[in-house]
Amino acid sequence: MNKKSIRILGDIITLAILTVTGFATHGEAGSSFLPRMAAAFFPMALGWFVLSPWLGLSDETVINDPKNLLRIPLVFLFTAPLAVILRAAILHTTGIPIFALALGSANAFGMTVWRWLYLFIAKRVK
Figure 1: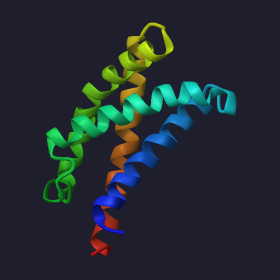
Figure 2: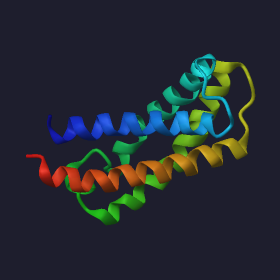
Figure 3: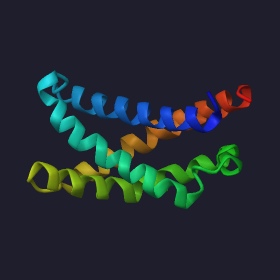
Figure 4: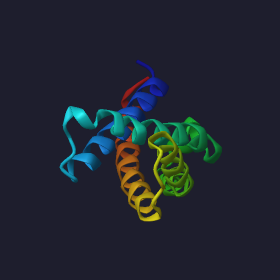
């Protein structure tokens, strides 16, 4: 498996883990919540994969420098509100600003941890 595949798979797994964790913290981790989880996961993943390349987070030369991990919260500053709006449209409900803040903060933290781990993994993969 090459570095790009590892990074993309890791990004998807990280977003999925963060989504499930978010629901679990509210006691909503059962299979009956899968449609709502999907309504949160897919807009967040879409936002991440559309916006992160604009800040170089798909470019190996950029992401190999640890100081560029600080770009991740900036991506989620825009990704989270977009995801909340899309989620609200999917679920036919309203988007709540505090949810965008919590969603963005949690995902920025989780993705930063994953990408920090990726720096070590990428050094081992040729």
